[in-house]
Image 1: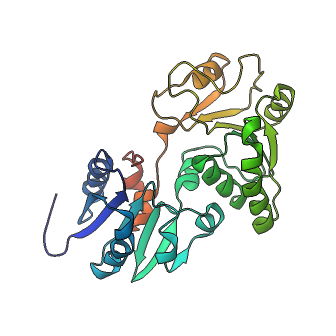
Image 2 (image 1 turned 60 degrees about the vertical axis):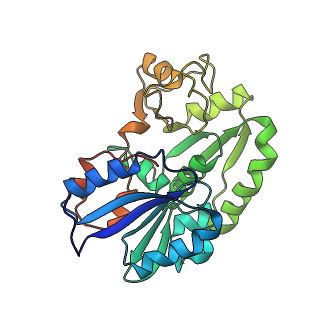
Length: 278
Protein backbone atom coordinates (compact mmCIF):
# COMPACT_ATOMS: atom_id res chain seq x y z
CA UNK A 1 0.00 0.00 0.00
CA UNK A 2 1.33 3.40 -1.02
CA UNK A 3 0.86 6.22 1.51
CA UNK A 4 1.88 9.78 0.60
CA UNK A 5 0.54 13.31 0.57
CA UNK A 6 -1.99 12.41 -2.13
CA UNK A 7 -3.51 9.41 -0.36
CA UNK A 8 -7.28 9.79 0.09
CA UNK A 9 -9.30 8.37 2.92
CA UNK A 10 -12.47 6.27 3.02
CA UNK A 11 -14.14 4.71 6.05
CA UNK A 12 -16.95 2.53 7.30
CA UNK A 13 -18.95 4.24 10.04
CA UNK A 14 -21.11 2.36 12.55
CA UNK A 15 -21.40 1.33 16.17
CA UNK A 16 -20.17 -1.29 16.80
CA UNK A 17 -17.76 -1.66 13.87
CA UNK A 18 -14.33 -2.58 15.25
CA UNK A 19 -15.05 -6.22 14.39
CA UNK A 20 -15.48 -5.32 10.70
CA UNK A 21 -13.48 -7.01 7.95
CA UNK A 22 -14.32 -4.15 5.57
CA UNK A 23 -10.93 -2.41 5.96
CA UNK A 24 -9.13 -5.61 4.96
CA UNK A 25 -11.41 -6.22 1.98
CA UNK A 26 -11.51 -2.67 0.69
CA UNK A 27 -7.81 -1.97 1.13
CA UNK A 28 -7.18 -5.08 -0.95
CA UNK A 29 -9.51 -3.58 -3.55
CA UNK A 30 -7.60 -0.30 -3.52
CA UNK A 31 -4.40 -2.26 -4.13
CA UNK A 32 -5.99 -4.33 -6.91
CA UNK A 33 -7.13 -1.18 -8.71
CA UNK A 34 -3.95 0.85 -8.07
CA UNK A 35 -6.01 3.45 -6.22
CA UNK A 36 -4.08 5.72 -3.85
CA UNK A 37 -6.43 5.36 -0.91
CA UNK A 38 -6.76 3.86 2.55
CA UNK A 39 -9.92 2.49 4.18
CA UNK A 40 -10.49 2.48 7.94
CA UNK A 41 -13.26 1.70 10.44
CA UNK A 42 -14.70 4.51 12.57
CA UNK A 43 -16.78 3.52 15.58
CA UNK A 44 -18.54 6.72 16.60
CA UNK A 45 -21.28 7.89 18.95
CA UNK A 46 -24.50 9.34 17.53
CA UNK A 47 -23.53 12.83 18.65
CA UNK A 48 -20.46 12.74 16.40
CA UNK A 49 -22.28 11.81 13.20
CA UNK A 50 -22.75 15.35 11.88
CA UNK A 51 -19.07 16.18 12.36
CA UNK A 52 -18.04 12.87 10.82
CA UNK A 53 -20.04 13.66 7.68
CA UNK A 54 -18.61 17.19 7.58
CA UNK A 55 -15.12 15.68 7.65
CA UNK A 56 -15.79 13.94 4.32
CA UNK A 57 -15.84 17.30 2.61
CA UNK A 58 -13.26 18.92 4.91
CA UNK A 59 -10.59 16.28 4.26
CA UNK A 60 -11.56 15.56 0.64
CA UNK A 61 -12.33 11.93 1.41
CA UNK A 62 -13.64 9.50 -1.18
CA UNK A 63 -16.62 9.05 1.11
CA UNK A 64 -17.92 6.61 3.71
CA UNK A 65 -19.92 3.44 4.03
CA UNK A 66 -22.49 3.22 6.79
CA UNK A 67 -23.90 0.40 8.83
CA UNK A 68 -26.25 0.33 11.80
CA UNK A 69 -27.42 2.50 13.44
CA UNK A 70 -26.60 5.39 11.08
CA UNK A 71 -28.14 4.43 7.72
CA UNK A 72 -31.20 6.58 8.34
CA UNK A 73 -29.70 9.14 10.73
CA UNK A 74 -27.15 10.30 8.13
CA UNK A 75 -29.72 11.51 5.60
CA UNK A 76 -30.27 15.07 6.98
CA UNK A 77 -26.54 15.79 6.63
CA UNK A 78 -26.35 14.95 2.91
CA UNK A 79 -26.78 17.20 -0.13
CA UNK A 80 -28.50 14.71 -2.41
CA UNK A 81 -30.02 11.22 -2.39
CA UNK A 82 -30.09 8.68 -5.23
CA UNK A 83 -33.47 7.36 -6.35
CA UNK A 84 -33.08 4.05 -4.54
CA UNK A 85 -31.90 5.68 -1.30
CA UNK A 86 -34.95 7.95 -1.36
CA UNK A 87 -37.29 4.98 -1.86
CA UNK A 88 -35.63 2.83 0.80
CA UNK A 89 -35.17 5.67 3.27
CA UNK A 90 -31.67 4.51 4.17
CA UNK A 91 -28.12 5.14 2.94
CA UNK A 92 -25.15 2.77 3.07
CA UNK A 93 -22.72 4.79 0.93
CA UNK A 94 -21.89 8.49 0.83
CA UNK A 95 -19.83 9.70 -2.14
CA UNK A 96 -17.95 12.98 -2.14
CA UNK A 97 -18.49 14.26 -5.69
CA UNK A 98 -16.47 17.46 -5.93
CA UNK A 99 -17.70 18.60 -2.54
CA UNK A 100 -21.31 17.46 -2.98
CA UNK A 101 -22.21 14.60 -0.64
CA UNK A 102 -24.53 12.12 -2.34
CA UNK A 103 -26.18 9.24 -0.47
CA UNK A 104 -26.71 5.88 -2.15
CA UNK A 105 -28.10 2.54 -1.10
CA UNK A 106 -26.15 0.00 -3.15
CA UNK A 107 -27.46 -3.23 -1.63
CA UNK A 108 -30.22 -3.83 -4.17
CA UNK A 109 -28.11 -2.76 -7.14
CA UNK A 110 -25.23 -4.97 -5.97
CA UNK A 111 -27.62 -7.89 -5.59
CA UNK A 112 -28.94 -7.63 -9.15
CA UNK A 113 -25.50 -6.99 -10.62
CA UNK A 114 -24.47 -10.34 -9.17
CA UNK A 115 -26.91 -12.12 -11.51
CA UNK A 116 -24.70 -12.47 -14.61
CA UNK A 117 -27.33 -13.75 -17.03
CA UNK A 118 -30.52 -12.41 -15.42
CA UNK A 119 -32.25 -9.05 -15.58
CA UNK A 120 -35.29 -8.27 -13.44
CA UNK A 121 -36.87 -6.07 -16.11
CA UNK A 122 -40.29 -7.50 -17.12
CA UNK A 123 -39.74 -10.43 -14.74
CA UNK A 124 -41.71 -11.68 -11.73
CA UNK A 125 -40.10 -11.97 -8.29
CA UNK A 126 -41.15 -13.56 -5.02
CA UNK A 127 -39.26 -12.36 -1.96
CA UNK A 128 -39.42 -13.79 1.55
CA UNK A 129 -39.09 -11.16 4.28
CA UNK A 130 -39.39 -7.38 4.40
CA UNK A 131 -36.41 -6.20 6.46
CA UNK A 132 -33.65 -3.83 5.40
CA UNK A 133 -32.12 -6.11 2.77
CA UNK A 134 -35.53 -6.96 1.34
CA UNK A 135 -36.43 -3.27 1.07
CA UNK A 136 -33.25 -2.60 -0.90
CA UNK A 137 -33.95 -5.45 -3.31
CA UNK A 138 -37.59 -4.42 -3.64
CA UNK A 139 -36.83 -0.80 -4.44
CA UNK A 140 -34.18 -1.70 -7.00
CA UNK A 141 -36.45 -4.27 -8.66
CA UNK A 142 -39.12 -1.60 -9.09
CA UNK A 143 -36.60 0.91 -10.48
CA UNK A 144 -35.25 -1.75 -12.86
CA UNK A 145 -38.68 -2.55 -14.27
CA UNK A 146 -39.91 -5.74 -12.59
CA UNK A 147 -43.39 -6.68 -13.81
CA UNK A 148 -44.68 -8.25 -10.59
CA UNK A 149 -43.39 -8.59 -7.03
CA UNK A 150 -44.86 -10.76 -4.29
CA UNK A 151 -43.70 -10.32 -0.70
CA UNK A 152 -44.26 -12.99 1.94
CA UNK A 153 -43.86 -12.25 5.65
CA UNK A 154 -45.07 -13.89 8.82
CA UNK A 155 -48.70 -13.09 9.53
CA UNK A 156 -47.72 -11.16 12.66
CA UNK A 157 -45.59 -8.85 10.49
CA UNK A 158 -48.25 -8.06 7.86
CA UNK A 159 -49.46 -4.80 9.39
CA UNK A 160 -45.92 -3.62 10.07
CA UNK A 161 -44.93 -4.28 6.45
CA UNK A 162 -47.95 -2.79 4.69
CA UNK A 163 -47.16 0.94 5.27
CA UNK A 164 -43.78 0.63 3.53
CA UNK A 165 -45.34 -1.10 0.52
CA UNK A 166 -48.04 1.60 0.40
CA UNK A 167 -45.29 4.23 0.43
CA UNK A 168 -43.55 2.51 -2.49
CA UNK A 169 -46.79 2.47 -4.46
CA UNK A 170 -47.39 6.14 -3.71
CA UNK A 171 -43.91 7.11 -4.89
CA UNK A 172 -43.60 4.80 -7.89
CA UNK A 173 -47.12 3.74 -8.88
CA UNK A 174 -46.02 0.11 -8.54
CA UNK A 175 -48.19 -2.20 -6.40
CA UNK A 176 -46.33 -4.90 -4.47
CA UNK A 177 -48.50 -7.86 -3.43
CA UNK A 178 -48.27 -8.82 0.25
CA UNK A 179 -49.06 -12.28 1.61
CA UNK A 180 -48.69 -14.27 4.80
CA UNK A 181 -45.83 -16.78 4.68
CA UNK A 182 -48.11 -19.31 6.39
CA UNK A 183 -50.44 -19.27 3.36
CA UNK A 184 -48.77 -22.16 1.54
CA UNK A 185 -51.28 -22.34 -1.31
CA UNK A 186 -50.64 -18.68 -2.18
CA UNK A 187 -46.89 -19.17 -1.73
CA UNK A 188 -46.95 -22.09 -4.16
CA UNK A 189 -49.02 -20.15 -6.68
CA UNK A 190 -46.71 -17.11 -6.64
CA UNK A 191 -43.51 -19.18 -6.81
CA UNK A 192 -44.91 -21.22 -9.70
CA UNK A 193 -45.17 -18.09 -11.85
CA UNK A 194 -41.97 -16.37 -10.64
CA UNK A 195 -38.65 -15.97 -12.40
CA UNK A 196 -36.74 -15.21 -9.17
CA UNK A 197 -37.21 -16.41 -5.57
CA UNK A 198 -35.23 -14.61 -2.86
CA UNK A 199 -34.88 -15.50 0.80
CA UNK A 200 -34.32 -12.14 2.51
CA UNK A 201 -35.06 -13.44 6.00
CA UNK A 202 -32.54 -14.59 8.61
CA UNK A 203 -34.04 -18.09 8.61
CA UNK A 204 -31.23 -20.49 7.73
CA UNK A 205 -28.38 -18.81 9.58
CA UNK A 206 -28.46 -21.68 12.05
CA UNK A 207 -27.67 -24.11 9.24
CA UNK A 208 -30.79 -26.12 10.04
CA UNK A 209 -33.97 -24.17 9.30
CA UNK A 210 -35.60 -23.09 6.04
CA UNK A 211 -38.17 -20.34 5.41
CA UNK A 212 -40.36 -22.59 3.25
CA UNK A 213 -41.41 -26.25 3.54
CA UNK A 214 -39.91 -28.83 1.20
CA UNK A 215 -43.42 -29.62 -0.10
CA UNK A 216 -43.27 -26.48 -2.25
CA UNK A 217 -42.66 -27.29 -5.93
CA UNK A 218 -40.11 -25.14 -7.72
CA UNK A 219 -40.39 -24.50 -11.48
CA UNK A 220 -37.36 -25.58 -13.48
CA UNK A 221 -36.70 -22.10 -14.85
CA UNK A 222 -36.65 -20.45 -11.42
CA UNK A 223 -33.53 -18.68 -10.09
CA UNK A 224 -33.19 -19.03 -6.30
CA UNK A 225 -31.15 -16.65 -4.14
CA UNK A 226 -30.38 -16.35 -0.43
CA UNK A 227 -28.96 -13.20 1.14
CA UNK A 228 -27.45 -15.20 4.03
CA UNK A 229 -23.69 -15.57 3.56
CA UNK A 230 -22.91 -17.78 6.54
CA UNK A 231 -23.33 -20.69 6.08
CA UNK A 232 -22.39 -20.40 2.40
CA UNK A 233 -25.08 -22.90 1.44
CA UNK A 234 -28.15 -22.62 3.63
CA UNK A 235 -30.75 -25.42 4.00
CA UNK A 236 -32.94 -23.32 1.66
CA UNK A 237 -30.28 -23.42 -1.07
CA UNK A 238 -29.48 -27.10 -0.47
CA UNK A 239 -33.16 -27.89 -0.93
CA UNK A 240 -33.30 -25.88 -4.15
CA UNK A 241 -30.10 -27.47 -5.43
CA UNK A 242 -31.54 -30.94 -4.81
CA UNK A 243 -34.26 -30.02 -7.28
CA UNK A 244 -31.72 -28.96 -9.92
CA UNK A 245 -32.63 -25.30 -9.57
CA UNK A 246 -30.17 -22.54 -10.54
CA UNK A 247 -28.80 -20.88 -7.40
CA UNK A 248 -27.24 -17.58 -6.37
CA UNK A 249 -25.32 -17.46 -3.09
CA UNK A 250 -24.77 -14.02 -1.62
CA UNK A 251 -21.01 -14.62 -1.25
CA UNK A 252 -20.85 -14.67 -5.05
CA UNK A 253 -22.23 -11.11 -5.18
CA UNK A 254 -19.97 -8.27 -6.25
CA UNK A 255 -21.01 -5.44 -3.95
CA UNK A 256 -20.73 -2.08 -5.65
CA UNK A 257 -20.33 -0.08 -2.46
CA UNK A 258 -16.65 0.48 -3.10
CA UNK A 259 -17.19 1.22 -6.78
CA UNK A 260 -19.55 4.01 -5.76
CA UNK A 261 -17.11 5.21 -3.12
CA UNK A 262 -14.12 6.00 -5.25
CA UNK A 263 -15.91 6.06 -8.63
CA UNK A 264 -12.70 4.84 -10.20
CA UNK A 265 -14.05 3.67 -13.55
CA UNK A 266 -12.01 0.47 -13.20
CA UNK A 267 -15.02 -1.81 -13.02
CA UNK A 268 -13.30 -4.78 -14.65
CA UNK A 269 -10.52 -4.76 -12.09
CA UNK A 270 -12.94 -4.28 -9.20
CA UNK A 271 -15.09 -7.19 -10.27
CA UNK A 272 -12.14 -9.52 -9.85
CA UNK A 273 -12.15 -8.74 -6.12
CA UNK A 274 -15.00 -9.88 -3.91
CA UNK A 275 -16.30 -7.15 -1.66
CA UNK A 276 -18.15 -7.86 1.56
CA UNK A 277 -20.56 -6.11 3.90
CA UNK A 278 -19.36 -4.29 6.99
